Length: 389
Image 1 (cartoon, rainbow, N blue to C red):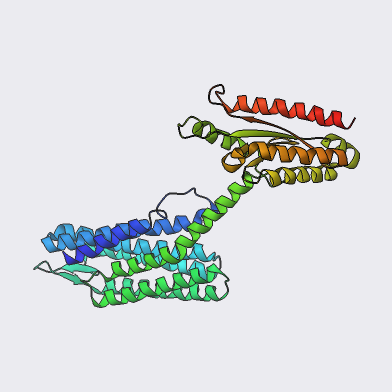
Image 2 (spheres, helix red, strand yellow):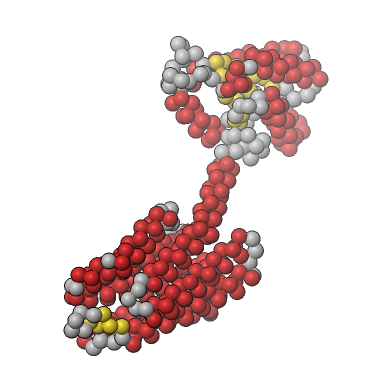
């Protein structure tokens, strides 16, 4: 059972370290490499399974079942070679004649092996079992293994060549692909000399562990960074840099849930509205209006440093106060109003604001808090206008 144990261990390790890589992803050009590599992993899993079963069946002396499993073993092996080649071609982005040669060789090895196995049913040329049930490796087996070894060496060499033309993390990735190919080629060579040892499985295990550690993990983290970056852009206002209305809506959903828990400590809402934006747009143009909006947003963020600020309309902003800003809300609001009063006198940017605090006794939803804050904001706006007339 020693032979079977290697295949079982290799199968388990592959699944554990490649759980993320084995997940299905949408079939797009951006996911091509991941899809190709996943296909290779699935074929390798089938190979490990058949290899482990071979050890069990051979040990039990069930020759007919062992024969069928050996056929599956060889088909899974050449399928994994073909899919490895396709994954390497996709990873290197190769579209030239050489990569077409690699793909042709992958299909050639697959075709030769399948044809040989069909012939082997009638005339043993790949493997057979003698009268005592002992496994015999025949010449064609060595031919297909030698072809695989050459293909792995060739893809490894190609990866090393591409490495020298690459920069950054790509150099490390191509080097890893090259080393993985060399490992596979070496273990295939050893398998030819020791047919009753699970060396091919060990080669696959080492190669996939290398790829997981030095390539797939990097690519997954890079993909996560890209997704996070895209999400950040999706939730940011392009002009002011603060959070946009989509982010505001998402935050309100979370806030509504949190406000119903017993540990919730409350929140405040400050509604802001920029005075005079329409006049600036009409008289000085939209560029001047955009600059006014950015200045207003900067002013809000300077005072409400620890609160998320959202732009929810053309000249409307909202800050949701929690933590220290909530605890110091009256002082912050007072300082903000004093700054605005000074700006109003000096003809600088003027932002009207109104604040309200969530009260669990009277407020059933965020909307009620917002309405109170919005009402106070309009009262403040009228007072600011009256002060300059």
